Length: 280
Image 1 (cartoon, rainbow, N blue to C red):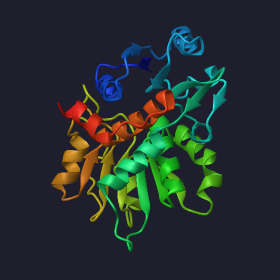
Image 2: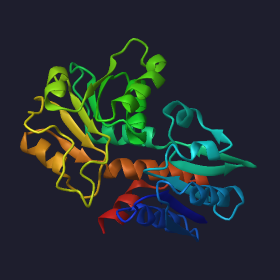
Image 3: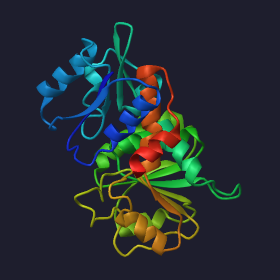
């Protein structure tokens, strides 16, 4: 098996450990390599994607900043990838090159592992960010029956996200506010889940937090940070210091990786194998 990851930068990636462990658990020979492709390198991105089409590679994961850039390069999108408007897994189906998104089901599975809200709690989430990761999170939450407010810096991008999911929201709350203390404070009442779906806080900028300065967390909420490097982000530390349950996105990484591996091999690896690989 010849697998890998497209993105930039990739120095923080744990994906090779996860997929090498999954391959070994099934006795499969193969390698999982990192393919750094700079944001503006369209020719390099196209050439790499075509290696899957030409069977030089068996599959690729896709991460920031190329989750949307690869869409014009595939023959077919799965329903989830089409709805989300972002791809994180490339695989062949017959002669077709398919783009899939395992981030949304991976996020929801790990969220439910980490935290189960009490039945009487409002299902109201604040999602920070408006890129490919945010699209997957918002899609997953809407499908699971949540109201969602997006706190964004790039308001035009966030507005496009809302418009894309207007039909899916089907009467539930789906709106946008600027990610500032004043604007976020106005929408915090009743919020029970806060998700950072932006890259803020990722190494090497681990001294940064997406949470607006001077703003208190809503009592009783849970906090989920898609960033998993460092293992405890500043955002997670802030939430825990406020007495809230909080976790990074390491579990989501494992869940989405397991589903991508299944696309390539038809086999779903044991989560214990993958957790062990990143904890060693």
